[in-house]
Image (cartoon, rainbow, N blue to C red):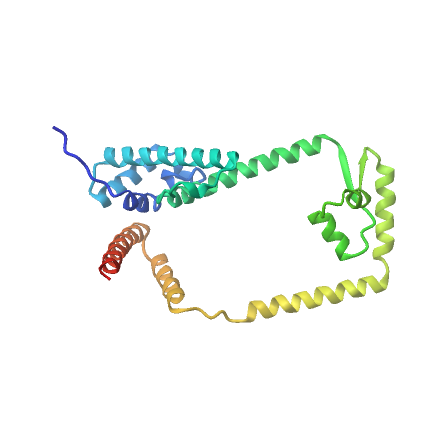
Length: 250
C-alpha cells in the first residue's frame, strides 16, 4: 500500500519560482537536463518530498493553469464576464513564470512583421506636419482618415519624389529661428531631467530594509544565497498563516 503524500501547492510553487531553469525558456539552463534535474533535487530537498511527487504535482498544476487560461479566453470571446467564476488562487504564480515566454513570442511576431513590410518595397514619408498637435494626431490617430491621408504619402520605387521631399524638409530646418526654438526646448527638457535625477527619493522603512537585504544577499556565495532565500520564504509563509489565524479569532 503506497503512502499518501501531502503537498502544499503554494509552498511548492514558491520554491519552483526560485529556479528559473525549470520554467523560463530564456534561461540557459532550461535546455540542460542535468541542470534541471539538480533544480528538482533542490526543491525536493527543501520540501522534504520525493522528486517524483514534486514533478507530478507541478505537472498537474500546470495542466490546471492551461485549462483556466482556455476557459478565460473562451469567456472573453463570448462576451461573458470573467467575474462569474471564482479566481484560481495560484494563477499569479504561472503568469509570473510565463512572462518572458509571452514577450518572446510577441517579439518574434514583430520581427516577422518587419520582414513582411520590407518585402513590399513601399516607403512611407511624413509631409506637411507643421505643429506638435499634427504630430500627435498622426501618431495616436483620432479617427479622421482624411487627416491621416494628407500627412502620409505612400511611394513605390520613386527615388525622385523622396529626394524632393527631403530637400524640402532640409530647407525648413535651416531656418535660424526654428533652430533656436528647438535648442531652447532641448535645454529646458535637459534641465528638467537633471532636476528629477538629482532629487533624492524618500523611502519608507520597508524599502530601506529590502535594499539592505538585497545588498547582503549579493555578497553571499550563490548556494548560500539560495538556501537563505528558501529559509526566508518558509518563514514568510508560516508568518502569513499565523496572521490569518490571528485575524480569524477577532
